[in-house]
Length: 344
Image (cartoon, rainbow, N blue to C red):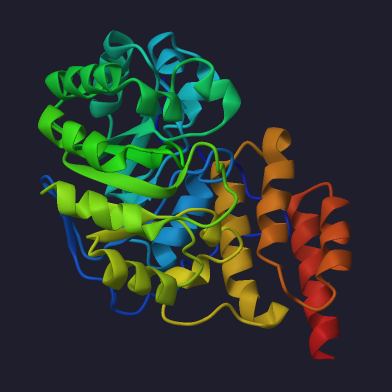
């Protein structure tokens, strides 16, 4: 079983490794300690199914994220050795510290999965207790556990009994606006052995709509002594700092706000020209060329690249040209031609 991502041969016209981005500016977010893990900053990348693969995580780390979390990983997929599930664990030394997020509803299977992960070059294990996706909730996983705190506690205790790594828990504010449970649920998680809790300020019923309630994050911070990481409606560094000031939370986790905008982890705003964005775009494509099985996932690479073009003049036509490409080499050629025309 291979746990470190494997490169693919370089193709003509596109280097296998695009040089890393220049070091990001000194962090403006305070350092954060989660159990034995010490982070230089408290600005983190959330797990995003279908998006936080190795190339995107590395891109965000280079941009300034202090910690990145894997895509959500099924405990059953790990224990029963499903190849696609194990591929989600691919990592390289350069992204450490690294966190893996597990989901499931069976304490014993979750504990076995955690033991598998803990044997790898991983620094933290996060347990998802907030995913609102119906196919996840129908199995009693994710946000469904907000309605079953006894099972949730059993999961945390079972995982903690199997591993020495810090265990964190990611939750939502509650099931509906009438059933806000996050403060008490977080206190239970702390008592069960969690080293930190991340709170998305939306309920299950909200999904990803409406506004996140930062007041719930503040209430969780007042209910526990472990670090509290806030999540929800963070679209810039300024938003993150505002959340910390408003809630007293110890860290900020960015999810969808980082898609198309890894620049938010650094000191500078997202450039308003293709020329300004090209170093990051080419770095991402170089990482994708190195670490992903492009024959299977080129569409995902196109999707990530398209998001990096958001807001540019002519972005719609440029996206269409990229989606028509059959390779990364062709994508780079289209982007460079477009840049040359922009500068001409």
